[in-house]
Image (tube, rainbow, N blue to C red; front, side, top):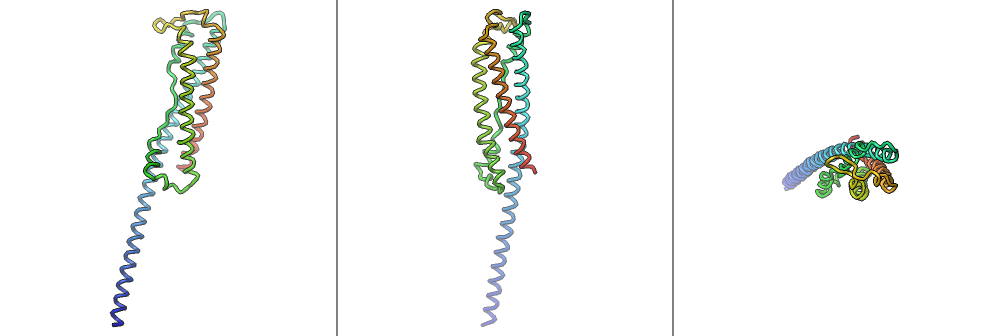
Length: 214
């Protein structure tokens, strides 16, 4: 009888050990899948951030070009021998004013799926949320305000003096007024402020990429 109990106890112990090993293997497998899922998501986020950086750099270059163009317009309007053809061409050119809209789909998917909780480094997680939920949203909001300012000062003032078909200034004396020159100065200041915002976003995005890929 004692031998039977020893045999039964041994069998139970073997079963328990087997179950524990199965749980351990299952946990290893689950942890591996979680790590792979996190790695893939972070890789996709880095790809999005790199694409955003390219977009930011292109928009920054366009704004810098815009400043140079507006400064030329302003200088031309303030001198006697104005090159009216150049002024009209530069004013027409300013219709294109790209603003920044980030790629957020991967981050949003990572949050909604709960995979964001797989990130154990609290600082990395905080940095991700700060960029996507604060910095990017601030950039979009300010970009929209910048668009509105551009419309208010460019569409409602400057283009009223240009014949888009013939590339001619319609009223040369009226466009020389201090009001128009001040409007051009305002557009220059707004573009500079927007560039500063873009540079801050680029700096934070680059820093986050470095943290994720280290």
